[in-house]
Image (cartoon, rainbow, N blue to C red; front, side, top):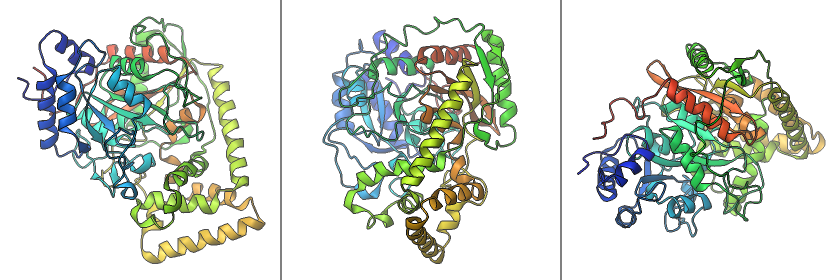
Amino acid sequence: MADSPWTGDACSLVDAFRAGERAPKEELEATLAAIEASDLNAFSHVDPDRARAAAAAADVSQPFGGVPTGIKELDPVAGWPYTESSLVFRDRIATQTGTVIERLLEQGGAVPVGLTTASEFGGLNVSVTKMNGVTHNPWRHGRTVGGSSSGSAAAVAGGLVSLASGGDGGGSIRIPAGYTGLLGFKGTFGRTPRSPGAYMRPHTVVLGNLARSVRDAARYYDVVTGHHPADPTSLPKHPSFEDGLGSHDLAGKRVAVIPALGGVTLEPGVEERIRAEADALIAATGMVRVDLDVRPPNLAAQWMMGNLATLLADLGDRWPACAPELTEEVAIGLRLATSMYNLHTAAAAERMRVAANEEMARAFGEVDFFIATTNPGPAFPAESTTSSPSDSFLEWAQTNAAAKWAFRGVLGGVRVASAFAPGLPDQLLDRVGKAFPDLINMGALTIISNIYGNPAVSIPAGTVDDLPVGIQVLGRHHEDALLFDVALAAERERPWPLVAPGVGTST
C-alpha cells in the first residue's frame, strides 16, 4: 500500500502500474490524503467519488492509465465547477468537457482528481485570486508559483500528483514551470485544439501540461493533440513525439544565447546561471553558438488590451457591475482596455505584431534556436499581484479610493478625447509602459513565442537563492519534435529534481 503519492514522473508511474508494483486505487488514496494534508492550496475542487470510480476502472495499458491528474480550473470538465477562478462565476457548472481534457481522460486513461487553482481568467502570472486565495510554491512556502497554471505547478512540484494540465497564452505554462523547477513545453500555435469556445483572437493559446520529465510532456502531446473541427486553427496530429525522442542530431545546429530577450531587466545571479546552463547544453550537444541581436518590439500592453475582448465576451452584460468581484488587476485592465482600445490602437498593435513576426523570422533565418531566461528572477512573494519588485502602475491605481476614482476619471477623459484624437490612447500606452515597466515586463520573456506562435520550452536550470530558475529555448514553427530533443539533451546532461526538496520519495 502506497503511503504517499508517486514522486517519479507520470510515465514511470504507468510502468509501475503495469508491473504490478503500484495500483491505481491505492495511488489515488495516497493522492487524496496528500491533498487533504497539503498547505499549498493547489486544488480549488476535489471530486473523490469520480476519481475513485475512474481509478477502479483504470486501464493501465492506456498512455496515462490510472494516473491521478489535476485539471487546471480554466479547462471545463462537465459536471464540475467552471468558475475560471472568478467570483463572478462562482456558481457556474460546466456542461461540456474541453477537447484536450476529454482526450486526456478517454484516450489517455488519466484519473481526474480535481481542479487546480489558476489566476483569474488566466490573466496574470501570479498565484493569488479573490476566489481561491494564495497558492504557494513547494520550494519555499510564501513564494509565488507564477501563473496562470498556478495550482498545476504547485501540485506537480509539490508531490501531490505527477500530472496536471495547463495552458499557455502568454507564458502560463512556462512561467510557473520556471518558478517550480518543472518542464514547461508550449508547442507551435495550433498544436492543441482549443475547443469548445475557441475564440479567434488573440491566436496565442496552446494547451499542455506541467511536467516532471520530457517524456511526460511528449506523451501528453501524443494523447491530446490533433485537429478538431471546432477549432479551425488546430493542426493535424504528429505521428508520435514520444517515439521520436532522441532521434535528432543536434550537432551543428545554430543557437543564439540571449538571456534578457526583449530587453527585460534580470535580477542578480540569473544571467550567470542561464549562461552556465546554455554553455553546458551547447557543449553536450555539439551545437554552434552564433552571435545574434534579436530585438522584437515589446507589445505586451497592446496584446493585453486586445486580449480583453474575449473576457468582455465572457462576462457579457455582467460588466461593469461585476467589477467589485474581480481581482483589482483584472478590473483595472478592463477599464484600461475599454477606455484606450480603439481602431487606431488595434492598427498600431497589428503593425507591431507584423514587426515582431518579421524580426523573429529574420532571426530564425540565421539560427535554429535561441536560449533565453524564462522569468526575470526566482519566485517573488506569493501575495504579490505583479511580478515587479518595484513600485508599479497597478499598485498606484489601487492605493486608495481617491486614486481609483481619479484613475477612472482620467480614463473617462481619454475615452472622450480619443473621439477627436484617435491616436491618443496608443501614445498614452507607450508612455505608461515606459513610466511603469511592470505593465510590459510581466511575461515579456515568454510572450514573444505566443505572439509569433513558435514552440518554446522552459527547462529547469538550477537555482538562484535556493529557488528554481528556468532556461527557455525557442525553436522554429512546427519543429516541436526537435525542441523536445533539445530538452531531452538538457535532461540527460544535467538531471533536475522531479519534485521540490523535502517532498517524500517513491517506494
